[in-house]
Each structure stands twice: as C-alpha cells, then as structure tokens.
Length: 365
Image 1 (spheres, helix red, strand yellow):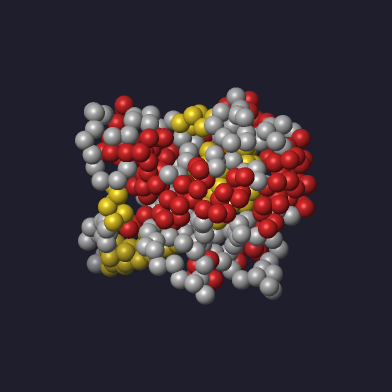
Image 2 (cartoon, rainbow, N blue to C red):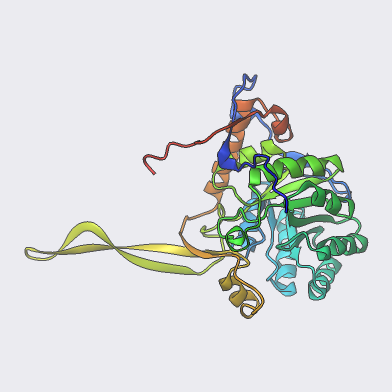
C-alpha cells in the first residue's frame, strides 16, 4: 500500500490570476484553433469543446448546434448503423464535411464489427473509443487494432487519469486521450468504488505527459460553469468534453416529464373563496451511462456482476442550446482578455493560478 500525499486539486480549488494585457476587446481574441495530430494527417480548425457521447448529449440535434458554432460532438454509440449513415450523409451535404463529428465505439468484437461497417461508408473519420476503465489491457489492444485498420483516422480514447497511461495510449495509436474518472455530475464511480482523481490535477499531469509524446488530451467531466472550461484550457487541455452543461435543452435527449407544485400564492375560485395556486414545471431526464437506468434502457438490464456507477436526474427544461453555447464561448473570450491570451492555444502559457479555499460568494444562491 502506498499513499501519494501531493496536493490534488479540482477546478473549484483554483482561480486564475489576471495580468496586464494589450487586448482591448473580447473581439480581438481567436478561439478557433488549428489542430494537427500525431497520427491523423488531417488538420481541423475549430474550438475544442466536445459534446459528450452520452445518450442525452451525443445526439444528432446537439451535433447540428455544436458544429454551427465550430464545436465537436461525440455521438453516442446506441444509434444504429442506419441512423448514423442517414444523419452523416445528410450532414455532409448541409455542412460540407463531418470533421466535427466523432462516432463512438466500445472495445468488444461486436463494437468493432459496427465500426467497420461505419468506416466503409467513408462518411466519418473521427473515432471515440470509450470505456469506463481505461486501465484495462483491452483498451490498448483495441486502440492498436483500430489504428492498424484505419491509419488515417482521428482516434480519441479513454478514460484514464495518470500520465503513464496517457503516454501508452498515444504511443499505441491514439491522437487524443480522454481523461477523467468520476468527475461527472451523474457519475457515482468515486462514491461506489473509491477510485478517481480531482480533475484539475488530472488535466495538468495528463496534458504534460501527452504533449511530451506528441499527443493531445481531452478533459472529460467536472465542468459546471464556463469558468471551469477556462481553467481546464489553461491547465493544458486541448479539448474539453461536456455532459451536464449541455443536458436539459431542447436538443438534448431524455424523457420529458411535467411536475405540479404548490406556490405561495392564492387564486380566487369564487366569491370570497381562494385556493393555493398550482404551477407546472417541465423537466428532462439526464443520466449517467453506467447508471441502472442506462443499463435497462440500452443493455437489457443490469448484469448481476455489475453495480450502478451513475445516477439519473430530472433537469428543468432549459430551452434552446445555442444561448448556453454562446455564453460559454463568451466566458472563454473574456478569460483570454483577463490573462492576455490572444489565441486559444496560448492560454496555458499565459496562465498563473491561485490556490483558493473559496471561489464564489453564494449568499444569494
């Protein structure tokens, strides 16, 4: 048994130090980055925010909004080949390409068969290999297999939280390593297994290791506000994957339900007669992909050897997604002016952090 006693930090444990800047307006910063990769020969110009490959956020509808704002989407793996092909063909006609779309795959034989069918269509080049435990030898072997089969594809694989595994994945064929175990808002892995690592420290170490061998890192989970994305980019993340921040919108997946609540108001129901006024609120379901709900919805039920490592929540319906996206991008631009970063890629070079015990005044929350 060994204990690492180095300080481990989350996004809420740090704040960025402002600096003098020659930037006079948020309009002067450039949040579009030109991405070049270790293995994939393609160059992509975009902002490195990725809609998570969850059933509620990796949807076709969210993908349309994301790519309209030069952002990525990892489609969830429960779409059929027919559904994926139809969407990708139509999207290529409308958008010109599918460069901002990842298709997702697990690591078993059935997953690879489906991937082979999709790659034969030549409609998509980006692959997200997604397993809960990236420390299994199956992940490395699968990355090797996919890279050998599709040498020019853009491959993102995860999830891990340590530099050594990031290096292994990059050297065995991944272009991007997805990092994060347990930071998601509907993930209960840390609670159930005791395994995980604070996400800010994860990004710092994994970005350093990944960049050292020519790869890139995608910070997956833990962001709750736009400022968390700013901290993540400054910590070295090349891409940031969002779930909960994109859930609950019109374009998100999930069942819709309506709940009725009593208010503190009275309404007349006749002469000198009143009753408590009722109010209806609309909600949308958001759930972790290892939750019992997800297992029942997509895998035919929870296996006896498994336990639920996620939860389901009902989020108040938030309306269209684009205003949320624009707010996030506005926050990133503003952060860049505070720290003097003219380009998205420059954010780590311009970043100095304070370690804090409190970052927000929550008296009116």
